[in-house]
Image 1: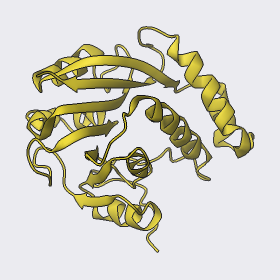
Image 2: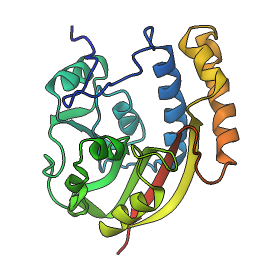
Image 3: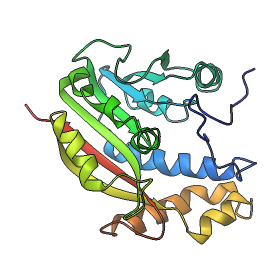
Image 4: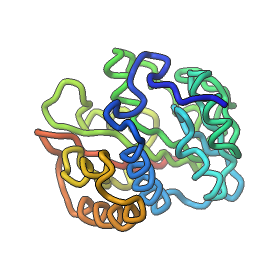
Length: 230
């Protein structure tokens, strides 16, 4: 059975290396699933792509929401893990700028923490032109980490501008979680039972939804919803 690699194909950490038991990852996945269920429309069998799906932790959610889900990632090791541990969706090897799908075929694209990784590799140019893969009714759900004034993070205005250049307009912007929250450290070290994760996630999502702006001393995980302009 495939074991989860510690790094992606570019050598970046897949998970927090201090999260040795995986409790933090389980909590964050649960929280993001809850948020995505609120913002992903019903699929009705249309094509949804989880771009940069990694080891597939969120790709099955697209299938559960009624989409024909395809997870795309450049790492064969991660895709092997996804196929064994998160079966159901189809997984294809690939990445920007040339995706293994037809033009104008994607009605929903999930983009999780891709832009910052591309920025760190100095490859944001790969994003240019991805809009031609989107169908007329497409939505893009983008989750990215934001931090003002830090060189490793993209300015929010730049993210929106990049999406606008692909023919998209911003519909929603919702903060999901804060990085340096004392509760997440208790979760990471197993001091909070897993049975409480759901209630904690609901509370954190409600707390973060009231926040405006972006922080300077930590990052926030923020969800954006864009739709395609006719």
